Length: 265
Ligand code: ARG
Image (cartoon, rainbow, N blue to C red; front, top):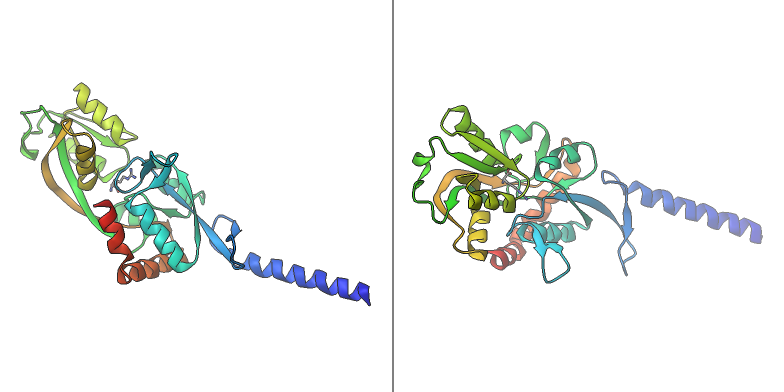
């Protein structure tokens, strides 16, 4: 009798494990038990280049935890849709390859939705509008607008839409050279040292930098190109994309989106 009962219990346990395994559909393989809750949550790995305030950056008051508009927004979406997230920091131009190879599940990195990227990833609905701005050193009085960049050198973030714009200018024979750098801080250093004359970067990020470090750079064109950001998932990962879209619609409707907006802008 006891033996049969034991066998029964073993079978029940095996059944439970099998069922919880099934809920781990698209993610990187981890199903975490939420503290206190008894429901297993799927964990998705998020890839980001976290030196991009106000969208994703280190919180200096909290041992470098990643904070920002994008971070709060995806956390709110995850909470709404009942999944957990884990963070992985990568260079911006490494994000799409990492998504394709399955190292990460979602790109949350101020990524602009472009036709070219649509060829290799699937984007959520747009979650914010941004655009490209042209900035120069504060003491530069030669470049007053995009009309004055002939023969000049651009410093841009590698793999970004700002870099693509600079490439266009170079292909047109308009500018002398393009320096590709991994992080915004490297770009600023190149402008300060005079190796580069200008940068093309996302307007909100340039504005945030100017706010933090006044007197270093200034914007001479704030409407080079308008863009929208989206969260990217692997091509064909419709389930995750639909969850993100549903969560985004919900947090817009329940006021959370506006709260996050007010916090960072
Ligand atoms: N929006 C631009 C792009 O998609 C730049 C994004 C850079 N993001 C970052 N976290 N470094 O190309």
